[in-house]
Image (tube, rainbow, N blue to C red; front, top):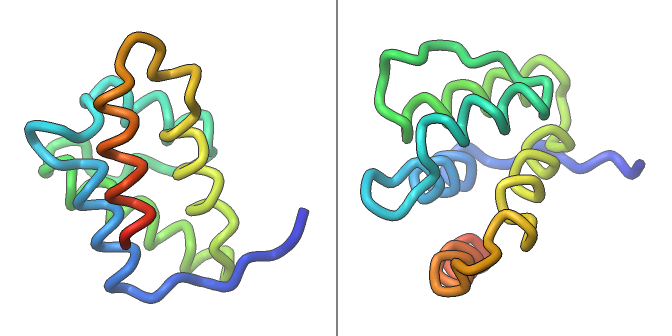
Length: 100
């Protein structure tokens, strides 16, 4: 697998905030599952979803000195199979992340 450069803090924060958005973001159970499958430590399940994702993803990136885990998490979060029957949600999330 290619090594992805580390992502800048504003990009990590923007994507984390988009995926953890209260009304349209990932559910708590999805975050738990995706972090686990991505081998990323869930640093503090008691904080907001947005900050939780940002802290987990940025710490993992800092520990590995590359953006691979962040890319993998994002790919898993947007796998089309997760959105069967939820086309609008998929398109909204994909559009937001592509914009960022």
